[in-house]
Image (tube, rainbow, N blue to C red; front, side):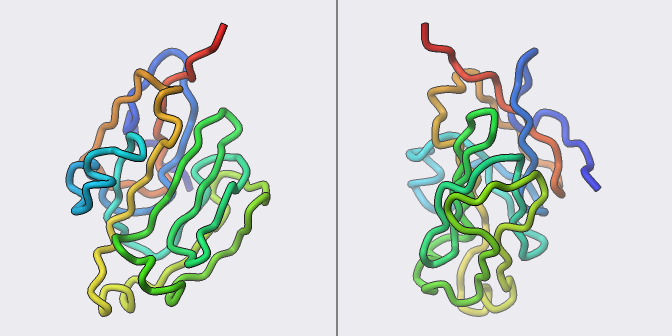
Length: 167
């Protein structure tokens, strides 16, 4: 079920396993047509052009927040990485229409658990870009974070470097 994708986020000897939460084409954040994402203001990451309307847990962890409009979810993985998975651009303007959340803040999840479903066709019909940024919000904890893109992903393994340890 989980097809490996080598080094979408650069690999070190110590790394945290993260799986791509959305199936589709993995592209550099610079290809996202929104400066908040493309300039990595919220943190480093990658974006996925989805091929199906499902977001799954990229690893074991806890849901920190599901946005009221259900277009985005925040999760802290057991290894410490804090991610935001943001479905589409400006989809907040849909006010939750075409999105179904299967989790809420505080829920514990396992890798592959269904988090959100979204109706790709209806969202596209409304004129929205479905590119889905996956942002590592605590990027400073991962100074060696290197993003590799260009592959098709489907709950594929990705890695980020070990968090910086405070002495």
